[in-house]
Amino acid sequence: MPPKERRIALMGFRSVGKSSLTIQFVENHFVDLYDPTIENTFEKTIKLRGQEYVLQLVDTAGQDEYSILPQSYFMSIDGYVLVYSVNSHKSFDVVKVVYEKLLDMKGIIKGVPVVLVGNKCDLTMDREVPVEEGKKLASSWNVPFQEASAKENQSVTDIFHQIVMAIEKAEGGTPEKSGCTVS
Ligand SMILES: Nc1nc2c(ncn2[C@@H]2O[C@H](COP(=O)(O)OP(=O)(O)OP(=O)(O)O)[C@@H](O)[C@H]2O)c(=O)[nH]1
Image 1 (cartoon, helix red, strand yellow):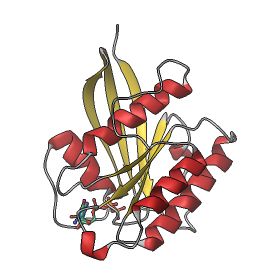
Image 2 (cartoon, protein in one colour; image 1 turned 45 degrees about the vertical axis):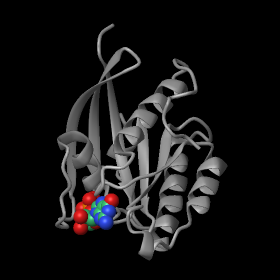
Image 3 (cartoon, rainbow, N blue to C red; image 1 turned 135 degrees about the vertical axis):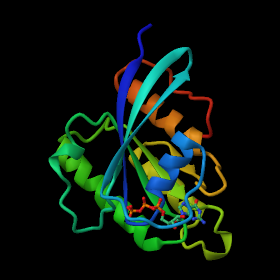
Image 4 (cartoon, rainbow, N blue to C red; image 1 turned 30 degrees about the vertical axis):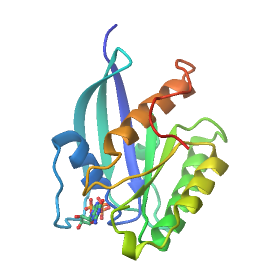
């Protein structure tokens, strides 16, 4: 089977760890310093269930509730990783707004491939968003949910496997189970 190309955007509030998750996944290291992103695209080829995928990962500039999302975030993007950080309730609120905007722009209520990610789960002492809240939100959207830590490389690969599977599912191609921790 020829490789399938998939374009995936990471979106969410500033400083939630979109770049860190992407860099941990693509380059296997953690960047401690904070360097706000304008927009970067990374590429990684993975093999999942016998199929090769060439992933283009669009690491977007952080959004807030007032951001007007550029048209390029809707065109030619196959799936979205929506990220908040568990130590910021504000980022949790922003991810809800971003999701609503995506649905508005995509013009379909169901079937936008999304994975909801609560990053920085290593920051146990600073947690503001309980895991249950994340789970509840994801289940209200009917999408997979994953807490992760780019810093400790926890569940980072799972996130990208889950979004690839969600895209396959939306295209009617694949079984629901991904073998990853999906709530
Ligand atoms: N403790 C902890 N810190 C993290 C984690 N992920 C990212 N950070 C830190 O959080 C800060 C912001 O990370 P970035 O990856 O730049 O965040 P971003 O969402 O890409 O930020 P923007 O480019 O502004 O949208 C950096 O100082 C990272 O080192 C994590 O899992 N745990």
